[in-house]
Image (cartoon, rainbow, N blue to C red; front, side, top):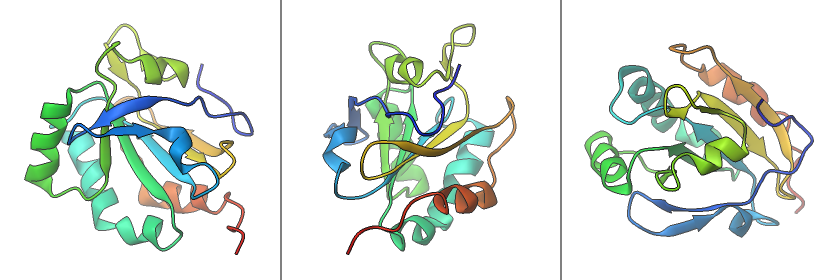
Length: 157
């Protein structure tokens, strides 16, 4: 079962597509984070979803939100996909131990070996403020992201 809103987001450290270590807690007190779990790089629906996010990157940057994609792909696969598609945000490899972060968030599909399409909006304190999951094969809409971002408290100035 996926984690619920108003609960702590489990901390983790994973490598991005360039081999850099990214830790969720490094954003605490600095900026909110949107975690986008998706099944597999190079697949049709996933490519469409992440291209839509790239096309709408200003939606996140204008609100000072860190956008992060997570899949069970290797960092090499993620780098090749990112370079091919021109993604300008971190893609994290939940490769080994296989799917551990997706399991911590309750979105790993054991029978498939990858995560469900799930999004978690995490505030600067590390609390999940909004989340949504779509049915298998169903892409998330950019409108769902807009609505989820509205759940964030304004950043203190």
